[in-house]
Image 1 (tube, rainbow, N blue to C red):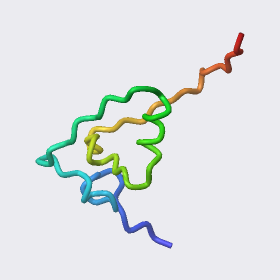
Image 2: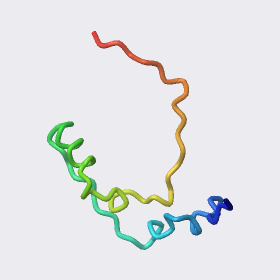
Image 3: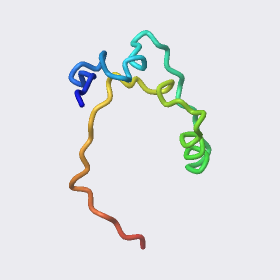
Image 4: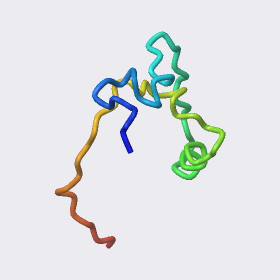
Length: 71
């Protein structure tokens, strides 16, 4: 099956509609604790593209990350 998307050009990906540079982003709310922040971001009604410019995302590699021990 031929790949119909050119992922080297973000404007031609299935997510191109999210790449509106003129879009005004919402401010990230202040949270009283980590539980309320987690609840906000995990809510299916929260659209992260309203808070972050998805056209400038980068790939991060955590290959050297080591597990920690709780004391």
